[in-house]
Image 1 (cartoon, rainbow, N blue to C red):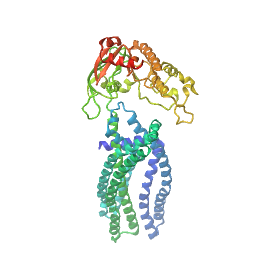
Image 2 (image 1 turned 120 degrees about the horizontal axis):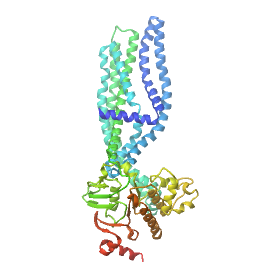
Image 3 (image 1 turned 60 degrees about the horizontal axis):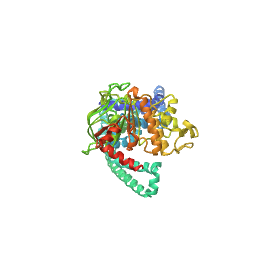
Image 4 (image 1 turned 90 degrees about the vertical axis):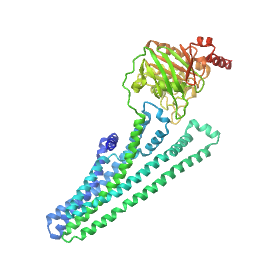
Length: 584
C-alpha cells in the first residue's frame, strides 16, 4: 500500500511540475469522457418511456440528459486532444529533468560504476514519458471505479443477478498482471544491449573520437556491433511482447461474452418496460465499458508502478540519507585518512589497502606515484565521491560520512586531468566552479590560471565556446585546461583545493608558470587553514610543496620535503633523477 501511495504522490508531483493549470484542465477533460455513458444511460429510460407513453416531461428530462451526455462526447475529445498535446510537450522535459536530478544530483558517484544502476537508468529513460503521461491516473482511477460502481448498482436494481457483471474483469486483471511481469523482466534483460547500442551511437557522433575512428576506418565495425546489440535487444523485447499480447488477448475475450450474456438475461425478462430495456442495455454497455477501462487502467497502473519502482530504487541508491554534521568554516587541524580501505568492483584487489595519511591544515601537499598507485582513488574519497569500505576520512576529527556532502563541497575546489569542456561562454565555463557573483572573481581566477588568451577571443569572457554553436570558438587542449584550472580557483575561501594532474595538456614551460601561480595561491590561503593538494606525475613541479607523499599500491611509502626525500635516496629520489635525466 505504501508503494501505491508513493507512486500516486510522484504522479501528482509530476503533474504539478508540468503546470497546475494545464494539469487541472487535462484531468477535467479526461474525466468528462467518462461522464457521458452514465448521462446517456440515465436519460435513455425516461426518453424511451416518455415516447411510448406520450409523456412530454419524461421526453424532455431524458432528452436533456442524453443531449448533455452527447455534448460531452463531442466536446471532450477536442479539449482532450489540445491538453494532451500540450501535456506531452512539457511532460517529456519534466520527466527528463527528474531522471537528470537522479543521475547528476547525487552526492556520490559510485553507483555509476554499477551495471544494475546503469541498466535501471536506461530503462527509466525509456519509460519516464509513461510517468508523465499518467499524471491524472490517481484521480481518473477513482472516477472510473465510481462509474463502475454506480452503473452496477443501477443495473442490479433492474435485475440483481447482473451485479456480478463487473466480476468478469477479475481473470483479465490477473492475466494482465502476469503479462506486465513478463514485460518488466524483458526491459531489464534488454537494457544492457540497449545501453551498448547507445554508447556505440554516442561514440560514433562524438567529435573527441571522430579522428581515431576515421583513421582506423572503424565505421563499418561500429555499425556491425550496433546492429548486433540492437537486434539482441529487439529479440528480447519482441518475444516478451508476443507472450504478453497472447496472455492479454485471453482476458479481453471475456468482455464480449459477458455483454452477450447480459443482453440475454435482460431480454428474457418479460415485466420490464421499453425504457427499462433501453436503460439496461445502456448500463450493461457502460458496465462492460467501465470494467474494460478498469482493466486497461490496471495495466497502465502496473506499468507506471514498475517505472516508479525504478525511479524510487535509483533515488535510494543515488541519494542516501544525508549527514547532519556541519562543515567547519576553516581548518584548524587538517584532514586525515585513518585505516582506509577501498576497492572497485568484485575483485579482491584493493586500491587503498588500509591507508593512513594526514594532510596538515595550511600546507601544500603533493601526492606522487606511478600509474595505479591510488592517487585518483584518494581524490575521490577526499571529495566524498566514494565512501571507504572501512576506516574513515576525518575533517578536523569529524567523519566525512556524517557530514552534509552538499555543504562540504561548497568548501572544496578541484581541477582534474579529465576536465569537462563546457560549451558555455568563457565566463560561465569558469563560474560553474562554484561562483554566482561577482564577475570580477572570474577574471581573477583566469589571471591565476595564466589564461591571458581569453583577452584575444572575439568577445573576451563573453565568447561562446564550442564549434557546435554558430558563433562558437574552439580552444586548444592547453587553453581548455587553463579554463579548468581557473574553474578550480574561482571558489572563494575553500578548505581544500585539489589539483589532479592539472597540467597534463601544457608544455613544460607553461606548466612551470602555472604551478608557480598555484603555489602563490596556496600560500595566500594558509591563514584560512586551506590545504592545497597537488597530484602530478612530473616530480619537478611538486618539489616546492610543504609535504610530499609517495604512494605505492595504495600505501604511503615515503613522506617529507623534497630535500628530505632526496637525502633518503628512496623511490622518490630514484624517480626524480630518472625524470630529470629525461629532460636533459
